[in-house]
Image (cartoon, rainbow, N blue to C red; front, side):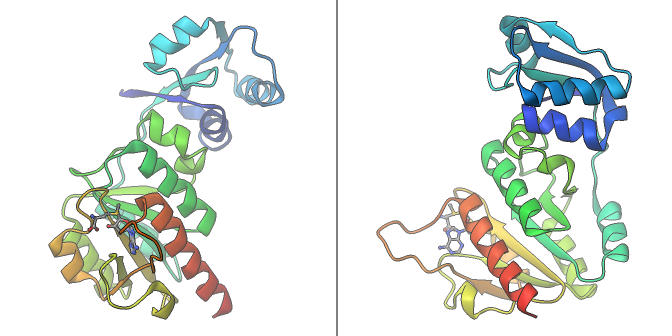
Length: 246
Ligand SMILES: C[S@@+](CC[C@H](N)C(=O)[O-])C[C@H]1O[C@@H](n2cnc3c(N)ncnc32)[C@H](O)[C@@H]1O
């Protein structure tokens, strides 16, 4: 059975709240006492887990990071969700609201996008299997628990998946700085997927061609583009605004 490390206060707490059965070992930093750690200890104890108190050096080594915030869990790796699980989500969701990330490779950006997706009420995030950061410990830590809440679907051929979404009635809107009309002029109600491009290259040509609509976020200053996680937050919350007024 494959295992993975999850660290960070929010990520480990969310894991214990949502999927405690996956957690096999839990380490806490010696000498660190605060409300959050107490809550994690209480949750762990409820599920029969005995946290091991250890030094910063051991936590750094085990997590291969210094960003663990004094909390580290070893857990059974989650099976990767793909096209079939995405179809199941569509079957059970009346008005799907999806986020597509076309090759976001920086785990901090992916984590921040998942965090915004959770806050906006997105039902699922879709990424290409080969050209994206996976759900590693940094992504989970940056997503502060959202990675345990919002499903991530890793698909083999993104353009094919987008066409399949269209066949199932989902409207695909791509965000691209050079689009001639803006996010605020676009219709973001109904079954919807918003597609964002990669940090360097933006949306790939095939992805762009599949989109039903391309929108830009107006830029007033000198720089030509926003960070992808910032653009994701702006786009998702414009959709939330339109969807709640609908
Ligand atoms: C850092 S940008 C990529 C910039 C890239 N040079 C390009 O030409 O698209 C990453 C992604 O964020 C989104 N984005 C950033 N700024 C945007 C804007 N002003 N309007 C629409 N989308 C934007 C797009 O999806 C873009 O592909």
